[in-house]
Length: 334
Image (tube, rainbow, N blue to C red; front, side, top):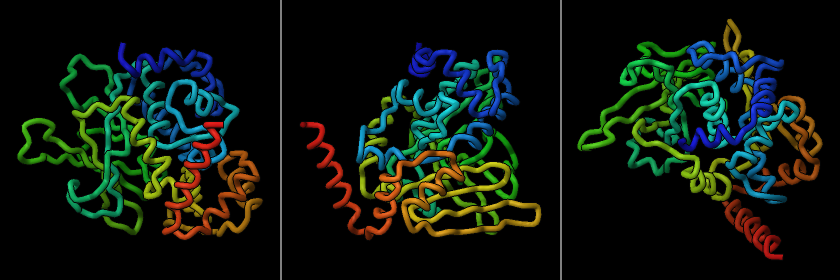
């Protein structure tokens, strides 16, 4: 038994009942699902469009426990049709991996490196660590060497992530509305092993192709490997996740993103793309906004703290997070 099989075995069928009820908004006979391309696309898109990408626990930990990736922690947030909570890549893709394993797919977790807004900068000059995780999902086949049956799945990249699985050997970009994604394979010269680097590129309306992240198909990523990058994500003042509240969800061609003190709604229509931006100025407005767009009940005390946090100058965030860590350490020792 491998790690993903153990994670899957630790989740009871009643929890899977709740998960599928949550993403499909109705009770379904998921045990009748066969590991096909159609089912893979249905699950991936339903998960992506239902469960928000969010970092609330990064700030909730200042008032409570840290973020964990063990089965019980994932079950309480994701395998419950009553909760509307989500998470980021380590949580989201661990959950999807367990679900797909339960259906009968062969799943591998692979480490990735986010390279947004860096153009064609070589990876070794990017200054970016491997702080992302994606999945390779293989459809059942007698020829395991046939990469035509492999898809890259990622429900944990937020609004710029692919809404559907990306086929490894697809010759043309995958289109969703006015956006496009594709996988570009690069041979790394001078290496004896691990020669291939897979780049996931995306193109938004009125923009050029941009590299979102790269990953390495030979580098298996175990859930225990998430511990170090998860700590960086939660605690490091240079992490994008510690810069402010971040929640996003895309559904029915409407993309809603809340970052720090701004809610941005982008609608992808037949005639083009429209954008509406609203500033968040107080805790009550933030609480109401989060519930309206994401159905998450945000504690008013936390909401007010988050609004005050957005007023902190970026250069002072390091001191703020250092104080928060010290505060938690002192509370834990009492």
